[in-house]
Structure formats: C-alpha cells, structure tokens
Length: 217
Image 1 (cartoon, one colour):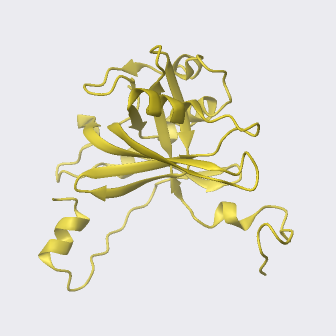
Image 2 (cartoon, rainbow, N blue to C red):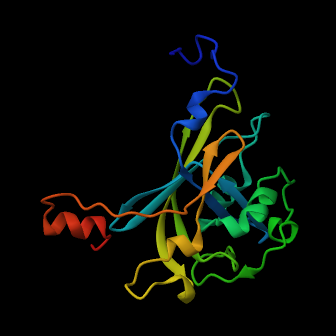
C-alpha cells in the first residue's frame, strides 16, 4: 500500500501518517500570558534536541480558523514555557487540558490540578507531575501548510531548570520510569504508557559516546 499525501486520497479510513511515528512523548506545556493568566495544554509533537545545553521543542498546529495556540503566543510574549511530564495517573487531566478553552480560561482549574511555583519561569508547574522543565524561549519557526490548520509553529527552548520529585528517583540515580508510567501518543484517539523497560548498550562505544548517551556534558 502506498499513496502520495496531498495528491492522492488515502486508501485507509485512518491516515497511517498519524500512527507511524510512535510512541510520541507528550509536551504538557504550561505558560502565562502577559496578564499573568495561566494556560496548560498537551502537544504530542514534543522532543529533546540536545543536552549541552539541554534544548527542547514543541510543535503546535493553529486552530482551523488560523488562530495560533495560546501556548505559542504566551511563550513568545513572556519568553518562557514549562514542560510537565504527563503520566498514566494524570491522563484524564491531560485530556481535559486538551479541550479548546477560550483565552484566559485556567486549565489548571478545569482539570483539578495544583499549581507549583517555578524558580525562573513566570508560569506555574503541575504539582502532581513527577518532573518538570523550566524552559527559556529561544525562537519559533513557522511552517506553512496546505490549510490554516495544516501549518505549524515549532517552538524552541533551552531548559534552565529541571525539577524531579525525590520519590521517583531510584537508588542508582535513574528515574523510576515503570513507577511513573509516562504517557505517550500513538495517533488517532490512542495512547499508551511505559510499562516495560530494557537496556541496550552500543557495542564498542567510546567513553565520550557513553557520556553523550547519559547526558553528561
């Protein structure tokens, strides 16, 4: 099976593009606007970019009428955004924060979440989340789509502070991923969570390569 997106109709009832790049980490992004009003929304186009310094990105499609997402506008206006780890236990709150609430509506309140203060960023963290990144906004790359909704704002940030709850740190210094059960997007209406972990080390990797994989600058 093959087809040319944009030129040929998809032969399947659901687009395979939506479910091939999986699982996708969720960027649960909290921001504040210029008036200090909090916003919280999940984005399944989220990724680490580098570790020295640690840099991240999230991508946000505009609304179908072309309006840009509040997370993007707030990050650009204030110079900050915060990533909160989404977990299986918080899945319902993540889903509520995905709703298209009007500007100024506090998704923390709608989802029944607690705000925790950041040390650098003006936006609050999700207190119930096991880990958060405070991110200084770097830039936005806007890519045009075939429709207003098809375009995308790719937002880049530098992680200036990392928060991790003590209870999710294992004795060897790693995060307890199986205990946390991070939430991930599969496509369509489907999600998954991490319930299995295995290790593979690259044969013959140099010491420098190993430090890179462990995030040691």
